[in-house]
Image 1 (spheres, protein in one colour):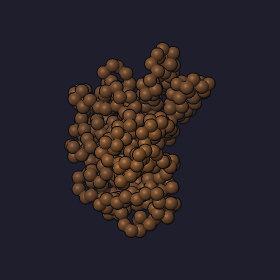
Image 2 (tube, rainbow, N blue to C red):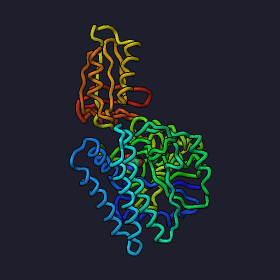
Image 3 (cartoon, helix red, strand yellow):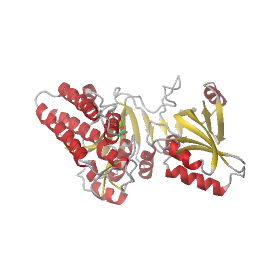
Image 4 (cartoon, rainbow, N blue to C red):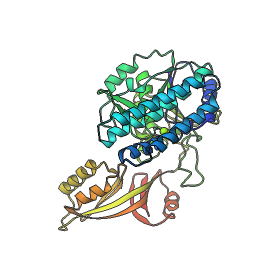
Length: 415
Ligand code: ASP
Ligand code: MG
C-alpha cells in the first residue's frame, strides 16, 4: 500500500482537483490511500465562522456563504452531469453545520472549534471523491473519524494508537481509499483535530498502520528547500534528508513537514517523498534512512510573531529551580509554546509563541510573583549546519536581541 497526501494548496481550485487525476494516472493508484485536507484557505475561512459564532458577531451567515460559494464555484467548473448529487452533498454538510449551531450548548471554544473546522476536509473529500468517480477512478470514501481515534484534547488531540491500529487494520488494502486529513474521532463520538496543518500527520498515521511502502506529500513547491523563499533568496532544494535531521528541522519550526509526521514513519522505516504536484518529473525530496543531508548546506528556519520575554524575581533573588518550574507550569497552563530558553543569574529569557491568544492572561498571572519585560513581534531564526556566512546573512536582517549556539545549530532572535 502507498499513501498520498494532497494539501489545501494542491486542491485550491478546479485545476488542482483535475491535477489529482493527472498525478494518480502518472503514478498509478492501485492499493493507495489518499488523504486530502481542506481546499485552499478554507480552514482559515472556517476559523472565521467559528469566531463569528462564538463571539456572536453578525458575520456568521456571510462567513458560511463565502465557504458555500467557494465550493460551488469549484463544483461548477468540475462537473457537468453528476453536478446535482454533489451539490446535494455540500448542502447536506452545510445543513449539518447549521444544525450544530442551533443545537450546541457547549461553550468551550476548543470543543466548538473541532466540531466546525472539520467541515473543510469533509467538503473537500466529497468533491474530489465525486470528481474521481465521475472520471472512472473509483474511490472508497471513508470517514477518518471512524479510524483515527483520539482523546478529547480538542484542537490538539492525542492519538489512541491501539484503537487506531485496530481500525485501520480492517481496511481492505486492494482498494483506492480517500479520506480526510487532520481530524480524529473521540470515544464520546465527537470530532477532534490534530492541530493546524495536521493532515501530514494523518497521512503518516495511515502509512504506519498500513505498513505502507511510502508516503508522498504532493505540494505546490518542488520539495523541501533549505529556507523559506519568502524570507531568504537563493534557496536550494534538499534531495535527501534523514529522519533525524528532518525531525530536528521540524522541531525548530520548518513548516514543510509537520513535526509529528516523522516519528511514525521513522519507526517503520517508511520513506517520505515530498514532491511537486505540478512537475511530476521532478524527484523532489526524500526523507529516509541514509544520508543526513544532501546537499550538505546550511538550512534556515524562520519563526515570525514570536515574543521574547525576560522574567526575573521581584526580590532580585537568583532564578533557580523552583522559579523555573513555577514559570514553566504557568507557560504550560496558558498553552504558550516555548521555542528557546536562556537562563542567567537574575533573569530567565524565553521566546514564546501565543497560538491560543493567552499571552495577556499569562502576564497577569506571572506578574503576581515576577518582574517581566517583553518584546512582541520578533523573529526567531534557526540555522542548522550553520556557517559563518550563514549567520552573517541572518544578522544583516535587523537587530540581534539574543543568540544561542549549540553544536551546529545557531538560533538568533531578531527585531
Ligand atoms: N486543513 C488543515 C489546516 O489547514 C489541516 C491541514 O491542512 O493539514 O490546518
Ligand atoms: Mg489545510
